[in-house]
Length: 294
Length: 213
Image (spheres, rainbow over the protein chains, first blue to last red):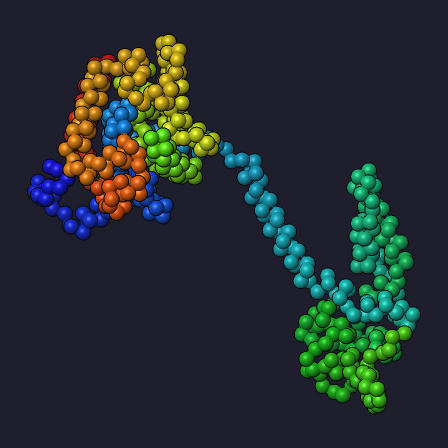
């Protein structure tokens, strides 16, 4: 039968013409793939199809052999099961290698390391969200006491023995950080820690302001109005987050949305940014709440 | 002519490179395609060193297994078949040494190995059955090509023998590229029709030949 013979194949099974068209289309694409003329995206699909289509793989094999013979290459016909034998040997080799290969060291320790990292991340978030951990650094009176220490009336409170206060911890951290690298390299870890403790003791003795700042957010504490220079009593700010003890939102200078009742100037929603009662408007148009630079 | 061979080698190299990359990514089905593509050539090469047909197949299988193991280190600098050829020659020589047989002192070059005319000394290893099978295969293919209509024969010859691209063939035959693609496909189908009975008979003949050895 020649390729142009139009006579139908009466001996073979009758197939759907649409199926024949699809099979022909696949073989046309395979022919182009053999020649390296199939576009890459179509080649990807066809290579995937070849994995499951035995007839197509047979075509691939025979067409390659025919091309070799036409080019005069020395080729010998192998039994049809040879490629399957090699595939079986490759599969056995692969499974043997997988079974014999132990898990690498990093894989064994990787699980534990990942668990430790997860715990560390969770702990970091918990500490950062804890109000007690962030209160002293964000509380407004701290800034006030440090910027203008003279009028502070709060008595420095020495920390209870055995309970390290935050200022001391901060000073400890600073002392450790300030230790020269070479000294750190020479000293043992215990020496570094002892040096840090000594530095924290010095810092505690030399920094009553910091201690006073640490004790600031109490119910009836006093502070200096940064705008008027007068000492004012600091009311509690019952903002929802301020209900939590030591919350940074409970600071005396925290701004809320004006849910307070009463006429006290300190209860103004935007306290302490409130105009003084009865103060005449300046003739030059300057803001009475802003103090001139000294 | 050198440019033509270079073009064909380049296209073959690209396809092989794509398949090799797939194997390196863990796709063993791509390796099956490489095996089916080169198995007949590799056995033809090994047959020049080893006469026994059964041993030839075992050594060919060992060659592909070694290639599969080493494929992770194949960087693609050389052509895949050149690399595979080297593995096949070494595997065949190791097989001869392990069986207390003296391997040939001079290796078969990848170019010489593929031509019928060269390497005649090593082809003395061929058995009469294998030589008959080789001649039958060649005659069958050539007869099928000669029986093709003119346009199919020209298209498949320009492609397989001269190594022209589809674009070059279209220019040469003054027809669209789609027509070239169709003609080459139809020519392959016609040749395949003639080859199938021979391959089936080769399948049934191999066990009897194996028992002779």
